[in-house]
Length: 482
Image (cartoon, rainbow, N blue to C red):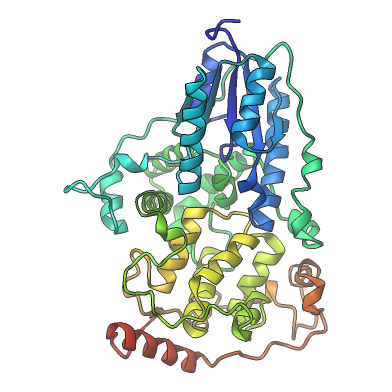
């Protein structure tokens, strides 16, 4: 079989969709047989419990989509280069194509795979598709990368974004399919324990569901998005973060739907696009300054007196949703029950941990990486460092979110807190009771537990944080409350 007619192996990772997929569409357009492949490698194994669980659901949904289109998803487990080489030998394929990822480990892996395959005469190609703008294409006037969001937004807001390509009209398939693992044999939900059954009820994986959510958001919510998105008791956001993380919906699709909404007069549409570009900014920073993933992004924070003790009582209480601060505890419990957390609640919970409790942001970041179904490496790292003060756009870095003030502003009627905290309610809703079914039995909590007592006074925690900032950075003593 000549290479011009040989199959193309398309290696899927965080791009589990058929529409708005430049690489896969290009493969199908050749007319050559296309073999969709996903490889369960060490990086999949290293995922936290919730993101691995959600990936399993996404793979099942994507496999169903391919089957419905007359194709199938081939599953292999092992080193990507070894598995791709084996598939090339088994199928007679002459090409391996994939969509690019931008974290340092993926870049290093992709460079290794591309070099090895090309040296063997294989057509190895990578495509854009996970982002709106490739990180190396957006530069400041002096040629460097952007370190502040606002000028980044101004630089990209007017850039032409290619329209999303439609689903291929035909998915060419090979005459003989290679062998495949069974997804069930991977036990992607194993680390979730008993919580998996609870969290599963709140999931809606797959491209079809993502597009439905987008339709609902644009039709009913986007106009009021800017004013309502922080209200904890409102259904005001798109709910697409987990879909975007796994590539079940493409960023170009979101961008152009947002632009259409702007043209139709939707007041909140531009702010929605700003949030989409905030994700781009996170990837821009991760690509150009990869230390954001595991070290303080700003210099001068190496000796800041955060606790890194995982047995710290404050950290343990925060992890278990038992800090005694209702808004913080509600946020953590929402995460254990649904796998997700409202963005405003994330900021409050992260600020409480890093400032009131003086616990290192890395401990919180790692905890979220284990518990969030919408985990994203760039957004998670930048978000935590932004709140902690050591990251980009963290001005003033000594901002302290007051949970009581935030609750009064964004959960005035207490509906969000009641939805997730059962203690002290005579008839708690099922959402609050689900927390006790989702958490590890080792925590020894049930619906009869007494209400949690505050682990720190808000005023004392604030003063301690501001004193630490003042000692380290000559911070104004009054601080800033949010």
